[in-house]
Amino acid sequence: MNDNIQTTTTGQTPPCVQQTIGKTKYLVEVYFSTTSTQSVEDKLKRVILHDLEHGK
Image 1 (cartoon, helix red, strand yellow):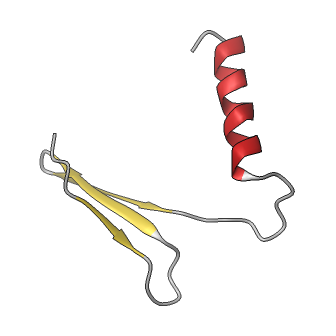
Image 2: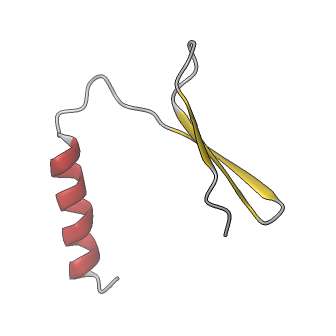
């Protein structure tokens, strides 16, 4: 696996992560809601608990 990860945070575009695995380039854009009521910590806890409850 290629660990060359590039992060872009300039201009009006949302932050993104770009990674190349094999001959495929993946570009993941990050979006944060301005109306969110949960912290990142709360969301991660919720996801982890959900995975534990459902055997993932």
